[in-house]
Length: 293
Image 1 (tube, rainbow, N blue to C red):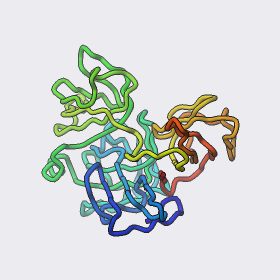
Image 2: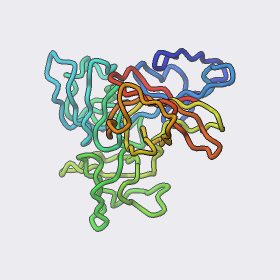
Image 3: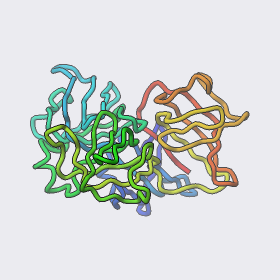
Image 4: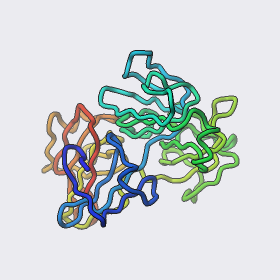
């Protein structure tokens, strides 16, 4: 497989996980965001893929004949550009402009968890929720940072989406729903009459796709959107890198980098298991993403 222009050979020992389940290469597609963990020979030892959103289309602002623009998918603004790879499992939907309200789409891309995603890959999965559920028993899903939490009404926001969690199962959330935590919401009921997502499950989510961590001196490279930055650290896709006097910033300066800036960061683990950035580069395209140790 090729990620950000780098070739990784896969072998019979390569473990591939899609949405946390053991899988195979046939379930990976060009444009998907992945984490690649290398073995000592530089081959792909493990490959992880988790989508950012698999949900119900509320509206499509891309007109017939156009291939770029935005979709509203369960309150998340999904930007489709010239680099986005499009696929469809639904007969008759052959372009992004043909996606209709009610369709179910899966999105992989760059997002900061605040309601906007730049899609690297988008796939139409089903015409509607009813036809989607038989093969996807956990329902649709959306990830993001909890905002506007109302403990009385048991609602919170992910982007412009209101989530109602009155009857939802909470997982890995010992303090319940709190502002600022990154969660994944699953729903088998979909949107109610008020366009609120009726949650069946809310669980704490690790915004870093890679389940394996490195040892002291191991390299780690990440391309994604900045979710936080200050004079001592930068957080990209939920992964924090320390910044020091030796950190090189290409095509810009640290002070000019803001939340939602697309960057590529290279770093190494220190003795405390923390990632220290050796190089930060501001990016202006998004062919794919690479993580590795």
